[in-house]
Amino acid sequence: MSSPSPDSASPDSASPVPPSPWLARPAVAARTGLLVLAVGTPLAGLLGLLLGGRPGAVGALLGALVPAVVLLLTWGAAELGARRSATTFAGLLMGSYLVKLVGVGVVLAVVRDVEGSSRTALGLSAVVGLMLALVVEAVVVTRTRAPYVEP
Image 1: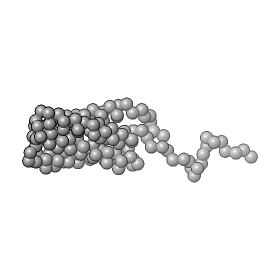
Image 2: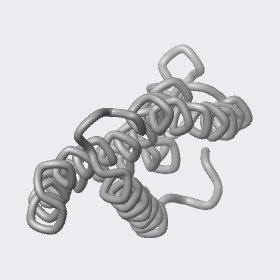
Image 3: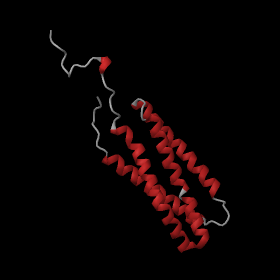
Image 4: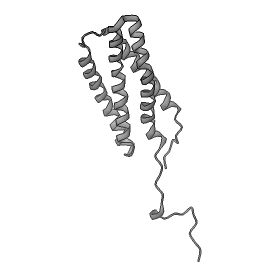
């Protein structure tokens, strides 16, 4: 009587498949983007202060809220979809874009009339922060090594 080979494991003894690197990419990108934003926000505030005084600093710091909202929503969608099917995961990420658009609009509507802030500094900080967030996400996604076909 021969014993079963280690390669022919029964379905009962199969170990769980580790999560794919493809599924971790958006969460890694959001986390990395938030770290960049944590460094960039004080820099934006300082630059706003130097160029526009106190209103410039307040506007720049408020503008940094916009990319923070986008990155947090990306992270949330990635965490929700990480353990779901590829179709559900893609749907969650696509739906998150609509939520991000609404979220950015709401944040901008709320902070635009804050007294004592510069709208110019707010807008520049928001645009630069969003561009940094997109660059970080693109770099993380393109540098992730993952198989083309998942087991």
